[in-house]
Image 1 (tube, rainbow, N blue to C red):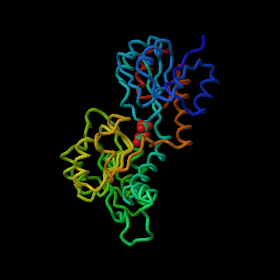
Image 2 (cartoon, protein in one colour):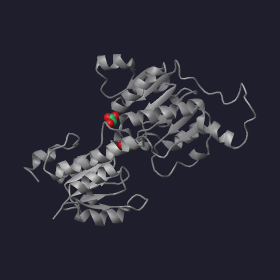
Image 3 (cartoon, protein in one colour):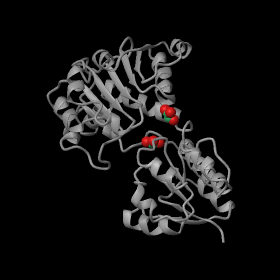
Image 4 (spheres, rainbow, N blue to C red):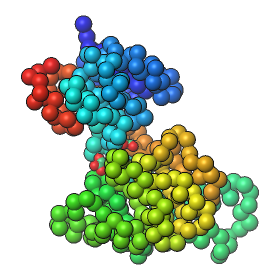
Amino acid sequence: MSPKVLITRNIPDTGMDLLKESNFECIINDADLPIRRRELETLIAEVDGLIAMLNDRIDAPLLERAPSLKVVANLAAGIDNIDISACTGRGIAVTNTPGVLTEATADLTFALILAAARRVIEADHYLREGRFNGWDPLLFRGTSLQGKTLGIIGMGRIGQAVAKRALAFNMKITYFKRSPLPAEVAARLKAEYHPLDDLVKNADFLSLHLPYTPGVHHLINSKRLDMMKPGAYLINTARGALVDEKSLVKHLRAGKIAGAALDVFEHEPLLAPGLADLDNVTLLPHLGSATAETRSAMARMAAESVCCILAGEKPENILNPQVFEQKSGF
Ligand code: GLV
Ligand code: GLV
């Protein structure tokens, strides 16, 4: 009998073709909505592999219903939706899609920095509303990037790719990371290490690039928003729950910071009350990795991970290699 793989949402053909070539029986949620928990609980019972989306919660109660599951391949770099230790406890391998989405996510971060600094979305709306009366020296004056300080929190692959772009814009680059970068990497990026609060106080643009864990829940809370410069912008392309959105709305409403540009939200797809009513925010529906090239690469990588693990091999992007040590073969 061919192994069964559940794919919880339509993914690019690069992934599906590989699964089909490998003769897996594919079960796909092809509704144009995230899979319902109930449906996931039912379908998981009969599959050997799962390609999960970042909004599918893969937790211990779900895994209890999955006697034959051997691999969860998350179609994302972030893995905060997965209880990895519960997977490890059941000998289930977990993979993500690191690396392939670094440049796309850094590009989108810069799209947001520029959109916020130059009021791109606000100005587009103004024009479409028929309010443009001809060139005006005072119209939509934004903020120059040149010479401004970018504060990067989380300096992994994506943070570093953002720093590279910022260099070309002649920005000053500061960063915070639990373990500072090797000196030669920091020197190449001209990135200066700062303790977290110091970084928050001095940034003109504060951009988040760290993974979400409960330890960094609401890292950007009311206290840190208070520390930010009145002219500063908050950019988030990482995970929504890194920011206390209620406090953010208050700060934006009161003009305590200049603006925010957000691609991720704590309770996606819901937005914090009041957020969408503000002019000084740019909001995107979680598009960090959304280029055709990147999504195809992610789909291929997730499918390859499933193939590899169901063939008893250990892929490089495995997050709990212990499962291979625990078991001698599947
Ligand atoms: C997207 O948010 C990802 O983690 O890949
Ligand atoms: C993403 O893959 C990162 O490590 O930043």
